[in-house]
Image 1 (cartoon, one colour):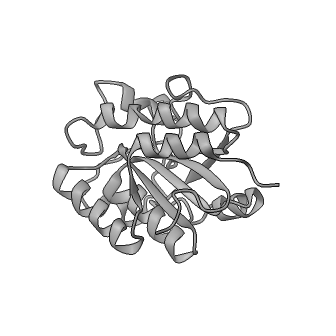
Image 2 (cartoon, one colour):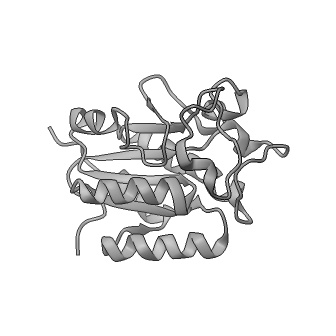
Image 3 (cartoon, one colour):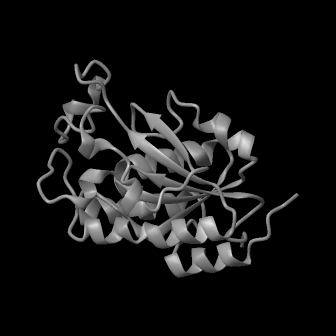
Length: 201
């Protein structure tokens, strides 16, 4: 069994936006308890900051003329995450964003697709990606798969991810665990591993 943290870790906070803390926002379906689950990510973020573990915020954004949505609106999702919309901004105040944290903006589901995310991971010499945020069955899952195929160790903080629906959420967690045994970890486990982590020289 692998260690929870292999080599150097980075905490990847996927698409936790201002809209997630508002009651009047729609466009993407969400499972019951979505807000409560992603809000728990603040515990992981605080632990990462306390232990000098890089925190990378991923933000899905689209241009106002919708030119970069591609096939994304062919499914259930409506227009969402328009870059000029304040609701589409990273929830910096709510999440405890700090100077020195990183932001990677994406136009598709995976943090790897068409971004500088992998360049950043290589620069940080990250080996283990600790994933939280949403949607479990879309952006978290797609990022996990690309990370897995790029030979990163992937850990999903199970308490801190939420999907479009309970069934889809559960199925994606099962699929990710299938790819990497031990990928699903509790928030308590991850925080404990962060607190035990000694940065490598």
